[in-house]
Length: 425
Image (cartoon, rainbow, N blue to C red; front, top):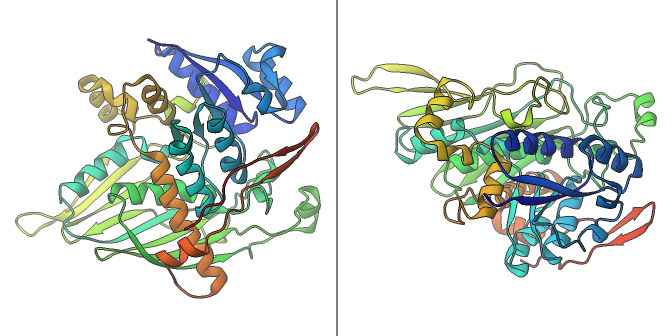
C-alpha cells in the first residue's frame, strides 16, 4: 500500500479530529504519515508539533513556506469558513490535492470558485461532510432510488442545539465562529451542511427552483460575554427556509445554534408510498473520530445513525420498521464482513485516501465538492431571501451571489494575500 504523506493547515480543534482519524486508520493498516503542519498561532503550532511528534523543521507559521516541500502528497485544510476558498485554492495552485473542512465556503460564489479550481489546476478535491458517509445515508438513498417511498414530495432538513453557539455559549470553540468576517454565517452554513447535504444527496441532487428564507440573531446574549469574546457584530443563530425543486419536491429547512425550545424534531423524507425518519445524523465524523478510550474532540456523544421506515403494505396496512444503521452495530459489522470495500464509504478521510490511491475513481467516489457546492447554493438562497424579504429563484441566486472569501489575512509575520478569480455567473 502506497504511503500517503499529509500536510495540515490550521492546528485548531478540528485538526485534532483529523489526527484522531489518521491514527485510528493507521491502526487498521492504512499507510499514512503527517509530515508537516502550518498554523499562524505559534503557541498552537508548537503544541501541535509536541503532541504529534513533529520536529521544528516540519512546523510552519506561513503555510506558503510549507507548500515548498517536495515530500507532500496531499494537504488537509482545517481553517475557518471564510478561509476555505482562500487557502484551498492556494493549495491546489501550488500543485497539491486538497481535502477541505466544511462548509465549502461562506457564499455560493466562493464555493463555485473552489469547485472550478479542481479543473483549473488539475488537482483532486474533497469536502468534509460526515453525514453522507454511513449506512443510514446509503440505505435511504437506495430505498428512494428503488421507489420504495413512491413519488417523493416533501423533505425536512433539521438541526438543533438548545444553546450552543460556538465561541459564545461554547467558549472552548474559537471566537472566529461568531466573527462576521471569518465565520460569516451561523448554523445554516456551520451545521446545516450536514443535514441539507444529506437530504440533497439521498434525493439524487434535485434541481432547485426557488427558496424563501428567514434568519435571526435575536437569541439571548449578555454584555459580559459580548465583551469577553469580543463580539463586534451579530451572526445569526437561526436559519429557516422553504425550497422548491423541479419534479414537485419541497424541502423545509430548520437550523439553529440556540433557541428557547427543546423538541424540534428531525429530518425526514416522505413519498406517496412511505417515509423515512433520520435519527441521530452524524455530524462529528463517526467512530474513526473517537480516540481510543477517549471522547470526540470538541465534545459531544458519538452519533448512532438510525432510520425509521413508515409505509403501507400490499394489504393496505400501515407499518413502521426501525432500521439500525450505525457503522459499529451489528448491521454495520455484517455489511463489512460481506462487503469489506464498503469501509471506504464509511469515513470522509478514508474515502479521500482511497480516492488518492486510485482505489476509488471520479465515478465510484462520493462527489463531496459538488454536493457541498449545491448545499451552499441552497443555503445562500435562504440568506438572500431573508435579506430581500421575498423568495428568490435559482437564477437570482447565481446572479446575486458574491465572492466574500478573505483576500488578505493579517498574521503575526505580515499579510498573506490570496489571489483567485471572482466567480461570474
